Image (cartoon, rainbow, N blue to C red):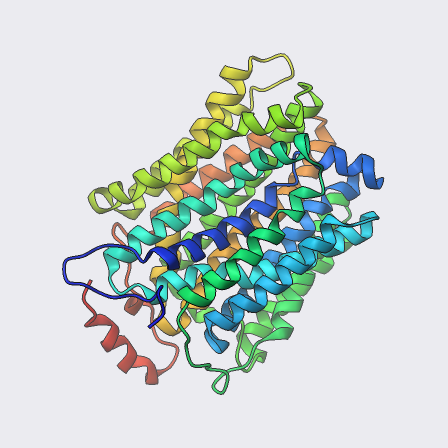
Length: 473
C-alpha cells in the first residue's frame, strides 16, 4: 500500500497527510496562477508591448482554457485513473509555465498561458477527486473538503501577494517560472501518495467534441463581452446551445450528462459558485490595478495589501466546517453570500482619495472571510449529490463553475469598467451577483447530501444506489 493510502481506524478522524499535501498543493498552484499575474500586468505590458484590450487575455486566456477543459479533465480522471491524469496534467502545466516565463512576444505568452490552463484543467478535478473518492467516511470527507475549499479560496488572494513579492524583487517572468520547481517537486509526492486505480476506458470514451465546443463558445462570448460586439456574443451563445444539445442528444458518452443537473443542490451550488467566482476574481483583478494605477502602490505594497485578505479566507474556511453540523449548508452559505454582498456594497465607495483602511482593507476582509465561509458548503453540495462513479465529473463541474465564472466575470466587467471609467460600477455589479447567490442558497439542503440521492440515469444503477445508501457515515 502506498504511503498516502487510507488506513481506516475505528474512531480515528485523522486525515492522510501526504494525500492532503498533494491534493491541496495542486489546487493551490492552479488557482494561484489565476491571480499571480495581476500585479505583474503593468510590467508585462511594458516589457512585451501589450495594448490595454490584449493585456487582460493574459488572465482570461488561462481561465477560459482552464474552465472550458475542466469537465473533460474530470471525465478523464474517471476513465483513466487519477494518478495517470495527474502526472500528464503536471507535465503540461509545468512545460507551458516554462514557455510562458520565457515568452518574447504577446502572442507567445497568451498561447502558453492558455495551454497551461488546459494542464490545470486536468490537475484541479483530480485534486478534488482524490478527496471525494479516497476518504472513507462522511465526516472525514467534510473536514478534508473544508481544507481543500479553504486552500482554493485563499489561493486567489495569495496569488496577488506572491505576485507582488516576485515582481518587486525578481521579475514578472518569475510569476510563471515559480511553477516549475513546485510542479517538479510534486511528481515524487504524487507517485507515493496517489494509489493506482484500474482504467475504465473500455466502458466510456472522452467527449472531445463537447469540450472543444464549450471552450470555443465561452471564448467567443468573452471576446464579444470585451469588444462589446454583438456578433461574437451571438455566435458564442448559439454554439453553447448547440453544445448543450450535443450533450443531451448527440454524444454517445456525454462530457456532462444532463441528468447530473437534475439534483437541485448540485445545480444550485454550481450556479452560486459561478456567480461568487465572477465577483471575487474580478475584485482581485480590478483592485490590484486600482492600487497601482490610482494609488501609486508598488508591486510589493500591492501584494502586502492583499495579505490580510488571504488570512481572512483561511479563517473563514476553518470556521465553516464547525458551523455546518450545527446550522446546515443552506444557512452557512446564505450568511456567507449575504456578508459578501454587504462587503461589495461597502467596497463600491472606493475612489483614489478614500482612506485605505475604511474603504479597501476592511471591506476586503469582510468579503474574503465570507468567501472562505461559503466555499465549503458550495463544494459539499456540488460534489455530494452524485454517484461515486461520477465523482470526477462532479469535481470537474464545480471547478468549471468556479473558473468559468472568474473568466467571464473579468471579461464582462472589464467592458463595464471601460464603459464607465471606474471600478465603482464593477463592485456594484459584484454586490448584485452575490445577492443572487444568496437567493440560490435556498436550493441547498440543510445538511450535506449523500451520493445516493441523485436519481440514476438508468435502471441498472439501482444496485449501486442501494450500496451507497448502506455506507456508514
